[in-house]
Image 1: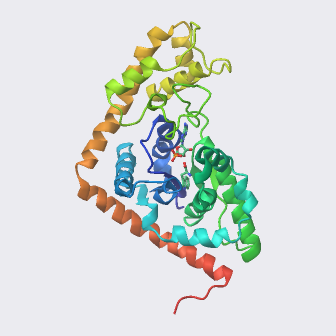
Image 2: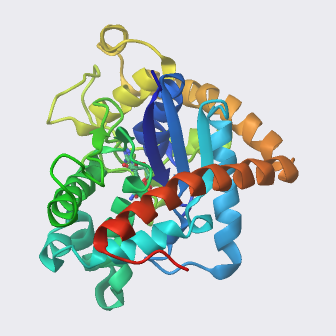
Length: 336
Ligand code: AMP
Ligand code: TRP
């Protein structure tokens, strides 16, 4: 029996932080041998907010190197850059024409980002979920591992599949395949270091709110020293009145590899002054192997390029096949 397929991606905007790692990439790595993985760098999504042309390609390379540094194994995973496979853009146009505008206007992430961007809202920001649906549907994956914040986009993708198949396929011969989201409970929503009720985010103006995968030990120490806590002694999980306690204990648990029970017992009588150095050491130790591997990959540009070239060819073969099926179902002629 062939392995089930997984597809996911991250945008090459800003530094990857612990939320991206624990909510997305680490889950790809942990499950990778069970699946056939297609993991890409969403550089077309990136330009829904303005990007500096001089940095765009370099940011994609950095992210690809981080994928490898986090432990993706090329025997199980195909890594590629979204813009290298033109079928993503083409399928987006076709799906745009069957997606009702109000489905997109209802997306929470659009509303939030549009509010932040004020006058600067472009059509791409609204259309972002259709591009994401195309990313997914081209590869007919079984599962799409993402953080909690992407759940609504996965639901929209499923609505698009149902609508497309209803319009253009016979009931027993669907053209597009319904994907399942894969959202882990722990780590699915890593919160900001400066406010335990807000998600850790690349776009937060404060660097102090997040720990990036490439932060130096000094930066990590400084950020944790200043991170928000509360005035209560004894740390605990799951107390809605203490979001920072829950967030920091969850991070400690995930990065130390200890169980929730072990961490709860270890920290129940600790004060913040005792917890912070312990937590700092754990974060630094967990990130060290990733940072070392990242440096090694970045020092070998030729290797990285060969990984991405190979990824493009493998991804393209699958994507072009699906695109051809979609176009045929919609009634387009095959080019002469
Ligand atoms: P983005 O930073 O929006 O490109 O997100 C890349 C991946 O990281 C997606 O799967 C997100 O769901 C996930 N992600 C982003 N921020 C967080 C967070 N604070 N906690 C958990 N997962 C996150
Ligand atoms: N929108 C996703 C994010 O910001 C990134 C992404 C783009 C993605 N296309 C995707 C994730 C397809 C999963 C599948 O996190």
